[in-house]
Length: 202
Length: 183
Image 1 (cartoon, rainbow over the protein chains, first blue to last red):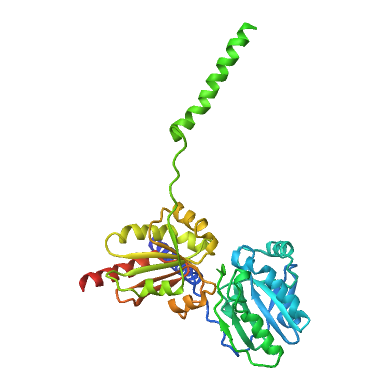
Image 2: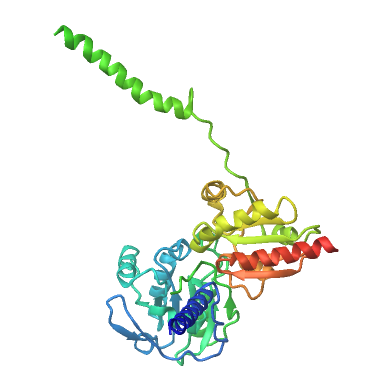
């Protein structure tokens, strides 16, 4: 009887250990592949920093939407705060909305709200509990941008520009993509690798 | 009155000696000479390509990291152990920081010093990191840390994005080292 109980206990421990190892392995840099350019991004709903749910559809711009994965503590993401705010302001009038998404497990809604206030980020920022949207979009780092058109078709994925140092920007990849669409042209460079801090997944 | 005149100066002397003595024991006469910080060399994309593709007699381990990257800092003690264990006999190991060039002589060498890391250290000094990232690995998105093991021919024989699995890395190094020795 005792031997039977012990074997059940060991079996349970084995299953738990397996689950823990599987979770750990998933967290170590194995980011799902991002959707291909041209793929449709399904609508999603995430809580804002006020804990009220917001859908992508409710925040989308009439000419498209930029989804920006951002962070509170990442110095690379923070180096882009002013540029991201200016991007949101510049394109708001042109019908393109900017939505920030924070998927970092260690940065809660209160921290995201305080950070946005401190850095005067006025565009909506959503929390992504369990990094579900980061996984769905295959987002690896902060900052990382996705530009979708009014039908949620992915037109551009990658970096905002080539350098975290604003003085060294030579290639405004995200702005170029937005400008192309606004002028009725196809996006020339649809992907450019984003460089930044890894998203801390839960 | 007489008592205070004698006792207070004597007490003050004893007290001052008491405070000075530990400082003297710690630093000796004068101040302790500062340990020089490790040298970190700035390299551009071409120099990085040269570093990786140059002819070599031993496998090469390259770790891409940055001071702002938590998992990079977390895994560093393990990498230092691996370096001390394998580099003297059978492995080349370099680190490439993707920090800002401003940190070349500050945060990067300070961190390496705190880790007692002695492997050759570089900082990628580029305005656009994409060509370097694509050269290293088209599948790599540039997220850190990223660790690559090359054989003597410059072929990637192990890659890991994210905090390295030490057992897995050791296994790959052992395999590469044995294969190299057997040739």
